[in-house]
Length: 302
Image 1: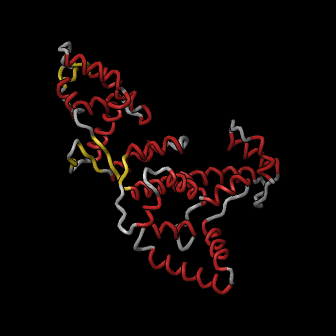
Image 2: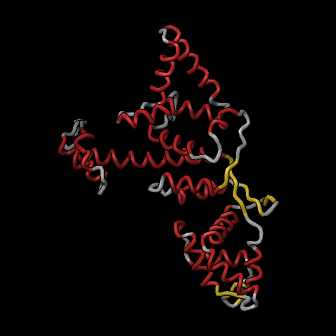
Image 3: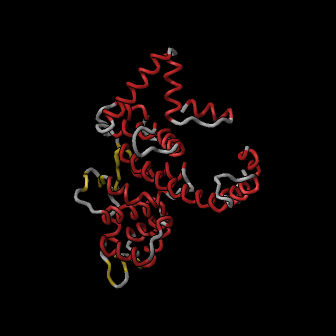
C-alpha cells in the first residue's frame, strides 16, 4: 500500500505482487544466493500452506503461483477494501482463528462510496445475505432462508431511509387517528427506499402479505409497527465479505477483458497483433466515453 501511494504520486506504474515480493527480498537480503534461497522457500511455503488457509491461498493467486492468477487491478480493489474495513486489517492477518464480524451496512457503504460504478450492492446482495447472521434485539434468528433475509433487509432500509413517512404512521397510530394504511402507499415507500434493487410492486405486495396483517388492501398498523420495535442487524465475517468481493471483482474484470479484446480485434484490421495511434485513439475514445481523461490518450499511447 505504501509503495503504491508513492508510485501514484510519482506517476509511475504500480508493481504486481510478484514483482513487489522479489524487490522486497532483494532490498532486505542483498546477496544473490540468500535472495534466491528465500524466494524458493517462500514459494514452497505458499504452495504447501495455501490449501490450509484462505489468506495464504489469496497471496498465492496474487503472486501468480499455480492456477487462478488474480489481476493487478483486482489487487488494487482488494487493498481499497482493506483500507476501509471497520477494523484494522492487521488483525485479519495476525490471528490464526479469524472470526471478526462487520455489519452488512458497513459492506454496502464500502461498495457505494469506493466502487460507485460497479453496481456491487445489487450484484452482491444475495451472496452476502446467505453468509449473514441476523439478530433481532438480543436474539439471533435461526433457520432463515434467503427470502426471509431479503424481506428483513428491504424493510430495514425502509425504516432507515423513509423516516418521515414512518414517523407519520407511528404518530397517527399512537394518537388513534388511524389503525391501517393502504398497502399501495407503504409499498411505494418501500420501493423508494430500495430503488437500487429494482423491486416491483408485486414483489413488495407479496413481502407485506408474508410479514404483516393485510386485509381489504390495507396493512394493519399494529402488526406493521411492532415489527420495528427491536432492530434487526445483519452481521458477516470479514473474511467472507472479502472473499465475496474478490469473486465479484474477478467476474467484473473478466467481462471487461472480453469487451477490451473485442475492441482490439475490431481495431487490429490486419490481424497481426499491432495497432497504430489512429486505431488506438478510436479504441480509447470508445472506452473513455465522455471522461475528463480523454486528453491523456497520446500519453497512454506513449
